[in-house]
Length: 508
Image (cartoon, rainbow, N blue to C red; front, side, top):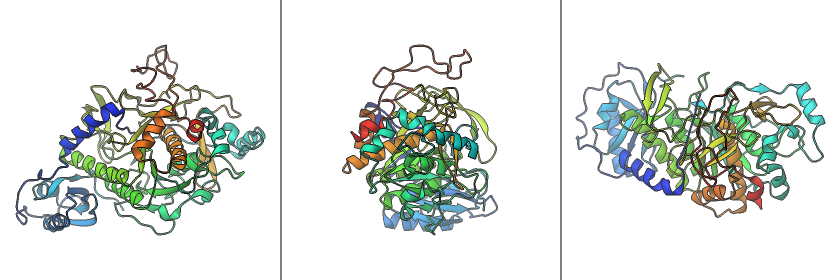
């Protein structure tokens, strides 16, 4: 399963971007001058791994690198020439080292540590499916004009989304792409707003636009359907409502179809490029890119992953797409000097390591220009699980908290939304907070269609409500132990960034 985070505070954005640029060698001339054709033996007796090879966008250079890939025992899956990223499969155990010596290659590395099979998400705990009896109880409490299950959607009321819908539910010209485990577009709450033409399956790094390819592999792949409903479930007299019930939502599947549901880099690269090239205005990213929770630039494989995914998400930004991502559920201070990562790599045998989150990046959320989201509960306090960090969190939104109990029919502090097979369930996590921000961003884009991604991010911050750091020491689960320390002031702080987003202000 997964986490995330991003670049924040305009004052901090430039230095971080510059440091990433310098570290990753985005400028020409960083590759060695080893001539083509001088690579070592191209043995194929190792595990068949996937790689990203990053080069310039020059067609001649890409073609020469393609030839070198073949000479080194690799096969090209797809070349994204617009960003200079080539997805490769190779069973040559020395492929990474060999290809990094080729002229024109700026970085290259394996995207996984175990062989290819025929990404983690940021929800916390198991889903609580709403039974027919529970649904009937909630429906009896619905007020006039509400959706049948809306009485349990405390999150909509917390950010004024219920009132915002009566003013401006969002424009059909705005699409939010859910980059995730798949979206069940047959759900009656999602079908009215689903955009099939902006949906695909990107597993493996190459887009498949076959009709229905974006759907989840099975009912256990429910995460993306839940997220999609939070964003744009229609106000159609069925089930629940989304934050922006008038906008379009699409699904771009990036998770492995097996039980691991891992999000590998080449699939995420494909998703950002596909979204950008198909006119998507906003992407929702409630995951981190596997197999590394933090990608350290002193490791050539991890550096190549950061480089490839960053190129793809920057390409999307340049094409007008705002990328929104979850901060993670580890209750980590992402502005600390050191964090313990005991989960990486998550596709083979994990080892415990200490990382500096200023040098080892959680992606895509920690990349330049990505909106990083922390989670709050019904009381407006940071969720007990939500990661945080001064200068890291951009904005906050309701993501649920089982310790913060709402005055609703079900008394459930989690987030209620859509599930595959026409069901509904409660989930909590920064995964659930992120689609609330994506929904508000969609409302802002509907009102200001000319707004660039940077302008949308600024608008998100301007309309947010910041409760400020708590007056008392933070004890999220009520066990008497201080769980986190908030740094910052009333305007910007480590728990909420610029504040909790406000849908009603967004449409006003």
